[in-house]
Amino acid sequence: MLVKIGEVSQQYGISNRTLRYWEEAGILTSIRMENGYRYYNKDSIKRIKKIMMLRKLRLPIQDIQRIFISNKLSYAIDALERHLEETKHEAAELNALSIVLERLVNAIKSQDDLSQMFNSLDGPSNTAICELE
Image (tube, rainbow, N blue to C red):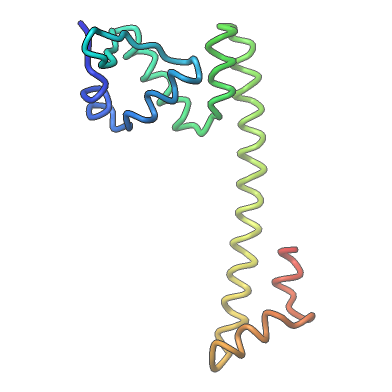
């Protein structure tokens, strides 16, 4: 059974452009009929589901390419472990940023107008900005 690109796009909530990009990246294949439309078979649909799962995990396309090209479990594990460490680092940075933003909001709440707020942000004694830097 073959499914048109538009139907796949609608069924899985991804754009036609994304599907074409995945083909350009070499991680997905389609069948071109005489009418010029792209069609996907059941194996391609399974691949789309795998790609979508990995993208939901925010795995970069380059890592997905390497996983599918190598077809080795060890590479998938390495890519996922590396991504896990990057995600933990990003989460720590976001946590620090939220603390600084909270302090900044509390510091500028005492200002009377917008110009005073920007003046207070520009001052060398602003510890919230210093922490962020």
